[in-house]
Image 1 (cartoon, rainbow, N blue to C red):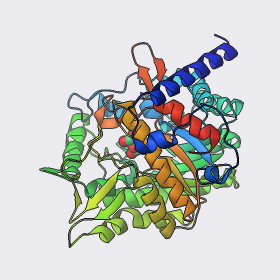
Image 2 (cartoon, protein in one colour):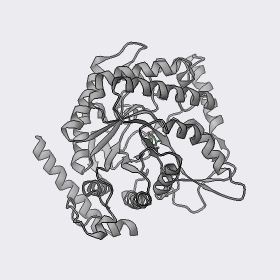
Image 3 (cartoon, helix red, strand yellow):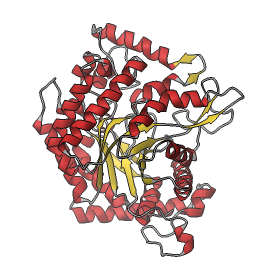
Image 4 (tube, rainbow, N blue to C red):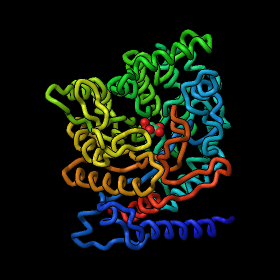
Length: 456
Ligand code: BGC
């Protein structure tokens, strides 16, 4: 199918799903009130519109991560772990969404939907599958991905490390290895030399605070830190690899020290090649709220985010990634009884976006981006309501003074959600993994139209 007819078909599909969604009574109040009446039309300049309009040059994007969508990332630590006889993963990633081959059509779809930004990650394991052995062919692959972004006028936001790592790096102790920062920096330098001229915004690390964040979660009868420590033992035993480690089950303090050092060294290496590239990282953060009289809210914030806010103050921007709120008593408590839960078991709480942005703006003065936000649900009408309310709360925080430059939805595609396999559906586009056919959900059309208008 040539570019034009594919594009026209997509436009028609987008119009149809948006119209279908809007004519139904499935939308919640906020969604119904501000949903577009005519997809693709631009708003005028009335005062009412100004209250709904986002700042000029606002970035509207969708995100993916290599291991979750590319498929067959066989040199990564996770691929290895997915295939152990006693695996902590629900199912292997396999072909995933075959985005490795289908990136061009996926990027075209994202642009046609109305977005102006694509956030994706480089797979270090493909680029350096054995220590010191860099693959120009794989670097060229990512060059083609970036060129496709340019072809569609998209801002390319590139994450250098999104959880997965080369297996040789994991065998050496991952981020706990004293050599980790230098090894990461060497990869960053090599990748930037090959790709840097096409990257618009860079991020060293995705959610490096995850180990600390998990240590606060208090599931009844389930201490996540202990669970991961046990898993690490099992993995090391099965692989007969006493130093093997990873992001999720590394020793928290050592992992953080390694990651902070890796960020700084990686940052310097990237800037050494491209001094003017806007560079930061992506922080996992929930909308933490005090619960009960002796809440340890401030302690949690200091423990999980403190060191990373320090780092953010030396960056060009901070990426924020939030999905729900966290009620903090002595630990992070389960969602309130009766609360609506997502497929991840998170409380449905879209206002986390405005609240997190407001809080982060009190901590750092650098520009902020929401680099991930979304919901895992099989019911797309819940996603529509979630996104609408999230954006209303974001707009309010911006109006109150938060310097937010963009909103990136997680995720473009229904994809491989780490330990949970393919069960959670975060995508605004569904994927039939037997045929790799993409189906645009109403939420994609609605969000894409907001992006196109730059207005609620
Ligand atoms: C990660 C994504 C993940 C998403 C939803 C973030 O923690 O960056 O890779 O899929 O949240 O759980």
